[in-house]
Length: 448
Image 1 (spheres, rainbow, N blue to C red):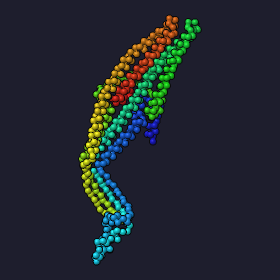
Image 2: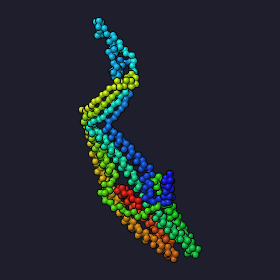
Image 3: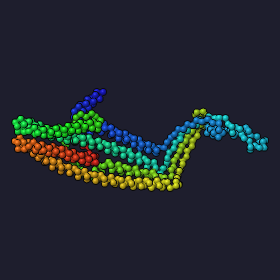
């Protein structure tokens, strides 16, 4: 109990502070409801495999028959099964050797027997000895279905890790942008104060103040929108982690590009692994269909006891039966051939889809890498443009104080500075998005 209490206190202490990305990734792997659902799918597929493997051991059934009948055939059969038949059951009491028409005598005891109860208890064991590889093919299919379920869970984990990491880096970008916007807002507030002072001294007009206040409202609106996006991100993280998230520790948003080759990504690709598993299923289905041309051999063993009372004289009335059965379908109107050809076509189709998946992922890798390079080049240029836009704005702000430029000029330069801030945010977000997409293909689940 004390250990449990300490663990609870530790959890409360951890989540009372800002949640790090590493903690979030650990939480999502254990708490996320979609990942839990994928785990249940694995359990279901595992049980299906157990069901397929169970066919190797045959089946043992207990059968209890309870009947009552006065049908002549049934009553005589009941007595034979109970080992209690007598010559009297054949109607010998009606036979007379002196009767010249003896062959036409209808024995009353045989034709009109008294009603009889029948209790039959038996154990029947049936075992398939040879099925033309049908059972092993179904077992292989169940095995690959379980493998696909495990890959689905792996893909689900990869997706949720991707969404969590992207949310953390989006939050870092938002905070960085808000810092820049707060600097811009501070400059506008300073410019607003300066303009009011200049109006008082007669060096500026009210229209100048309105322009400043209009720009201030615009920047305030953008800040409010970004803060709303922050709040939405917190709600989304709470949904992903299945835990109430109030504060996180944001990472450095300069995300490094993963150093991994296209071939390594193809080797690790979940989509390709799933396609290969599906191809194995199609191959097993073909084997199962081809078993139609082969015989099926099964064995059976049965022990039973029967009486007119339940388990009456069970030891004396017991009997057994053992046997083999061969069943071979020799003609089915061409249906077997069509089924096999259809399975072959489906296997060829799956082969094409597997190759298409490989080529599609290879193309996706090249597309992502190209977008990353484009975004990096754009970020590099925007960094320079942003520094220049800020310096130009500060220069125009100084010129305005000296009455060497108009307020409109200052506002235009400030708008250009703000535009560069937002463009840089968009470019960095695009780069991070593409890097995350590449990491997702490569199944990289880093915590930074």
